[in-house]
Image (cartoon, chains in turn yellow, orange):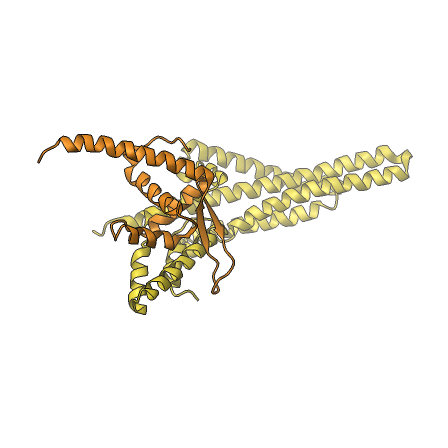
Length: 248
Length: 115
């Protein structure tokens, strides 16, 4: 364990960078802190004195850490920051709500139709499982953030990366299912030329239904993530503003 | 980048960059070595806090003026050392000339002032 792990932990908590960049920065700092300590010891300082001097020299101010975070922020993250809660107007939020409602209704209507399931390929089931997980996570997080108002910083972002992962899973399922069923259909057509029309039509209807459902689930998951992430950012900013307020 | 104009408004930043590049012109260094060498060579006049040092080093690295390289584990630790790139050497030469001009102009004006 690093002698300066307490400093590093405090720095890690204040350094707003994604992994693994954050780990690399902290690893560099950890090695430098230890080496600086060794250098002071070689110059004849006692352990306590060397540790005190190193701690004093470290002094990672908020400005310095913000500058580090800014330097390492990816183009994607800079682009995403433009959509932060502050950047949105009331109209933009309303539009987001309308889009969310539209996608949710379309997904619900697709799932409610019996012909949809009769026509769809087997890949519709993973999409439904992903969809259920997405709705479950959204309802759980919405309950936590909007109803229970559990705004403890530690659990604020929990499950949000999972929503993004489920978005990717739904997309992958749709594309993979579409292409695999096409490949299987072509193989069947090669064996039975006379039924080519029937097989192709069957694939087109089934594959399209699966693709539509997968895309709807992916869009829904991404929109849920966006809505929840905005709420989380607003809570974090309110928390930060409260901490910065001067005591009355 | 190598012909960046000297910005009087950013004197501190330019000064910090020039000092780090000057130390690195002497060879590859770890972050802590840079800070220590700077302090010792200036007899304590220039003291870099690590908090200030990392953003400057990472910016210079991002701009391609210095190169950071991780060494293999020594005494159970991996270390990052920095060295000047060819672009960094050209930039440093430009900065030296710019600092020379700055001090010349500065002395001309301040030198006229008699207390």
